[in-house]
Length: 188
Image 1 (cartoon, rainbow, N blue to C red):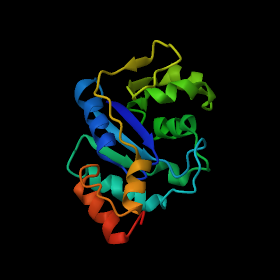
Image 2 (image 1 turned 90 degrees about the vertical axis):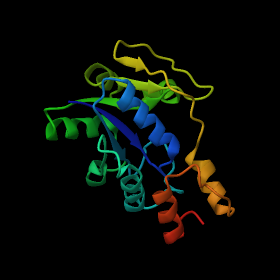
Image 3 (image 1 turned 90 degrees about the horizontal axis):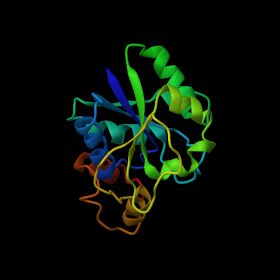
């Protein structure tokens, strides 16, 4: 089975993430998309991150009704910060029956060469790239596949800021995720 791995902080997971995953699963040869919740991205500050278990729970709530989606906490059990190539090695050992591809935004291509063992990731796994507004790639490789999809310009930062100021994120978040955020008073 060919699986798309969608890595992210998901702080919080939003409708844009779900749209992208749905397009990747529906309009490519990926049979499933697995969301890999990253406790700490080595290229981002962890200051504004919710606890990883809250972020994992929100992903679970957001994808519960889609049997083609799955959430993984594999990086919770790995050294931090976690590196994609190391996670790919763990998943390949654990699920040798699957072929894995990374689902990334085109904005990642401009600094992809800085990722640990980026060439190995390209050669062994490959990328399925969705467009990001105003951002395009800077590398070429036969294992990079650009996927035609609408431009989704929703940011988790915008959502967090909206919630902090008491605004509505009703149509930016899955209803169960919004309920979870409100019930636990997250981002307020």
